Length: 306
Image 1 (cartoon, rainbow, N blue to C red):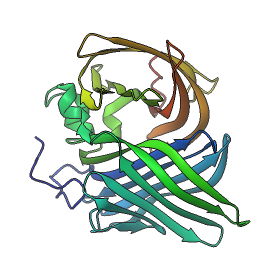
Image 2 (cartoon, one colour; image 1 turned 90 degrees about the vertical axis):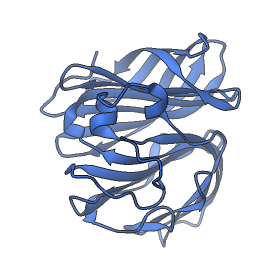
Image 3 (cartoon, rainbow, N blue to C red; image 1 turned 135 degrees about the vertical axis):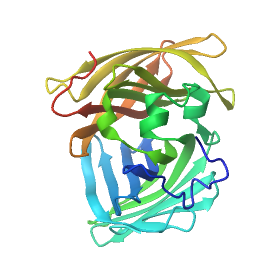
């Protein structure tokens, strides 16, 4: 199903699926500055449209938000640089380094993501097969990697925030049929001891459980054999308050950790919504980490899996 001869940072031609998607995603958090961001460029060739997330926050409050869900289609891609609604994302070194820039009088961004662990396809490493709901209806190819994130953010009052944090970036091509998923939840922590985790549990409308999962350990990505999670939601049933996770890697080691929310933002897709959180994660031995916590919900309300 995956066309390995394609450049995921360049143009990947659509198949016949109406929701064919190619996307470029970035996040980061700098605990010293208490500042982070969620950034995504999505391109839907068969729908002839594109979309953009560009949300920055500090100390639990928004710094700048730009959300455009039905922009005109573009043939540009990350490999040569793509600009949507003033936001430019560009590959600097294939699969290793990329930049995000934005320059308007009230907000300016110059940030670079440089690889810590190489971008690796969690769909393939999860070995769920071509009938797995993620591989069949959500994405054919989804490499993720951890990065050091550096640069500056300049606010409209002239304050410059120097960023030196960590984050994930990912690439994707294939269908992105949100209507096929009833619910999913995700943890992407990067711990101070170098451990990184991709733990995604999805529940499809056919009732099947589906996973995207891998473990960054000792400088490389390895497989994950089991994920257990318990999420505590706020009263709206869509915002993560905290969580408990147990992830078993391919070497048989169980990694238990908890999470607590630092920031939340919602991203709508008509009959589906993503709740994007920045979380603080804590391993059983007390090691701290930071990273994405995400949930998705189908409408009319189909539950949150709890």
